Image 1 (cartoon, rainbow, N blue to C red):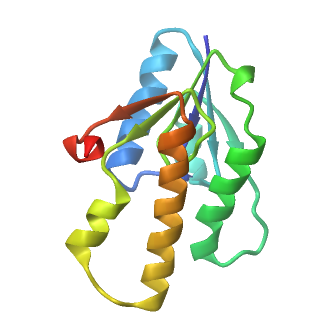
Image 2 (cartoon, rainbow, N blue to C red; image 1 turned 90 degrees about the vertical axis):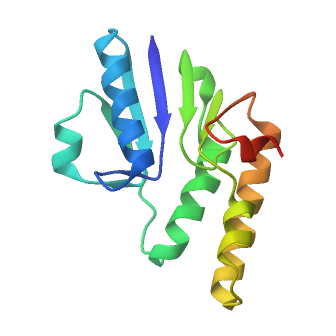
Length: 148
């Protein structure tokens, strides 16, 4: 099968990235052709993985805005019919399956705070997340908080 995986970054940095590597290696071990769509790539990490990397170039945007530009471009340009299966590990509405570990509003409540930049970030995250939950055909949730 031809599999697409979508995530912000292809680097060794966190829990969702470890999950991404497990998916890449698992699908490849099963004989699938794995494509990773991302905007931030650690080249050494990419070379060590059995996948085809599609890096989306976002130009000279400020670092904080690159993620949102990536999400928007994925939502408007990614063609899930080009793959037998597509999964996203970030807040995009374009794949067959969205894999999520939790929901952003829950983290906002836990964190609190009143920083204006943080509030703008929270609104953007929540808007992309809402679109993902409404438009993605299937959601794989790793947290009971998602059902609420």
